[in-house]
Structure formats: C-alpha cells, structure tokens
Figure 1 (cartoon, rainbow, N blue to C red):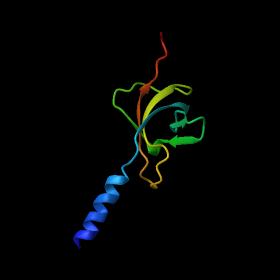
Figure 2 (spheres, helix red, strand yellow; figure 1 turned 90 degrees about the vertical axis):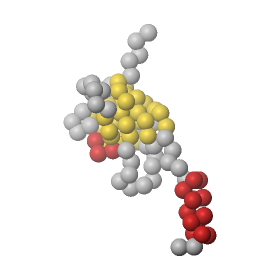
Figure 3 (spheres, one colour; figure 1 turned 180 degrees about the vertical axis):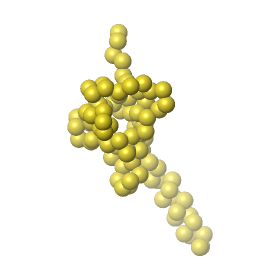
Figure 4 (spheres, rainbow, N blue to C red; figure 1 turned 135 degrees about the vertical axis):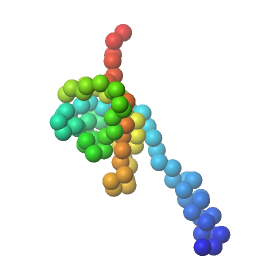
Length: 90
C-alpha cells in the first residue's frame, strides 16, 4: 500500500473517533434487561449493555448511570456500560 493510502487512513481514523457520553436511563425491564434512555428514543437491550461487577441488583424503574454512544451507527458494535443505580439522596 502506498504512503498516500496510509496517510488517508490515518486522517480518517483520527477524525472519526467514537463518541463517548455520560447519560442516564431507566430500567424498563429486568428480565430480559432493557434500559430506556433519551426520553424513550433509545431502548438498550441486554446484548448492548455491559454491567460492572459489583454494581448491585437492578429493579424495574431504577435510574442508572450509563457511559457509551447510544447512537452508534455500527451494527452490532454498540456497547453501553451500566455504571450503577443513581441515588438521589440529599
């Protein structure tokens, strides 16, 4: 491959980094796990979610902290990390 192709690939990869965002969602279902986020515009299913070990039990209606890109255009590549239940205690 020529240096022009290598340079083009480097520029493309540099300019198209995956977006990572912190956001919250609501547990819509526990079995199977489904989390609703962005006012119901995105429904994240069990295969798209990764839970941290020791994150505790989730129950329907829990608000959870999430990290990832829920609008990823790559099919099958979407993975969103569940950080844990948001506690609104003051």
